[in-house]
Amino acid sequence: MNAEELIKQGVKKNLQGDYEGAIALFNHALQLNPNLAEAYHNRGHAYLQLETFEQAIADYQQVLNIIQNSFPLPQNIPQNIQNIIQNINFDIAKAFHNQGLARFRNGDDQAAIADINQALQYSPDFVAAYSNRGNILHILGNYKEAIADYNQAIKLNPNIAAAYHNRGNSRYALQDYQGAITDYHQALEINSNFAEAYYNRGLVMSHLEDYEQAISDFSQAIKLHPDDDQAYYQRGLVYSNLGNYEKAIADYNLALQINPILSIVYGLRANARYHLGDYEGAIADSNILLQLNPQLAEKISNG
Image 1 (tube, rainbow, N blue to C red):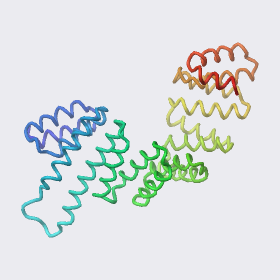
Image 2 (image 1 turned 120 degrees about the vertical axis):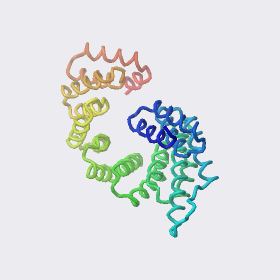
Image 3 (image 1 turned 180 degrees about the vertical axis):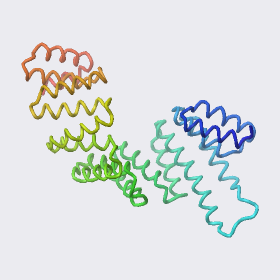
Image 4 (image 1 turned 30 degrees about the vertical axis):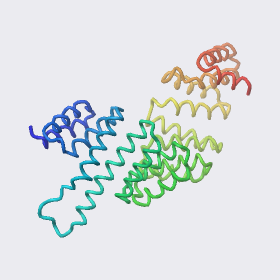
């Protein structure tokens, strides 16, 4: 099997989720030809999925070294050379972008942003680079900068549900609740099965005390992801706020079936049981909370 065929088989393994098998094939291809940028790039993807970030970074760096130092232009250059240059620039941009993602997941925030900045220098219309830089900035708490990146991603491609959803998260963090609702709604217009958008819109609706809509959104999130312990817990909290403690307890029970160490739910269920006069149950839940999370138990007891 030649190097080209090995790479094709490796890409198939990546798509199937067999990352270790893919790496073995890319290794073989690179033994045959150590200057194959495509093999390094795809092996870097496999390492990234396996969370071996240092090896992923090294592979993406190798891609950059090969492309930037060799530029393998064909012998008979066509008249439209601009297309060739754009393709080369996009290959470089992808390598910087993916290296940035690997660095971020490895805990090197600033280097990650620097890499994605470089990606956008080579390819200013790289939608994924704007979206992922926005995601990093959001996680770092730079919500306004994140929104600017999501705006640019949406401008370049207005049909990406995730960009609207993530911009909604940043707007929610800035207490722009109506802006967040608008973005979640737009995300759901594009993808009606976007469970996370229902869940996060439910959080905003709950905060705004639109409990009926919050319950509807959490219920839809649960329908799409029946194992989402957070959606059960949040819907239970809404029921508690409405004084419907029986339904609240039912949701808390389901949340704890999925995640028995979700400590806050024991505190919430203790409160609901107390309101229903089940004092023994409330004490039992409070004791479990105390064992799992003494600080949270103290905070709840202090009001």
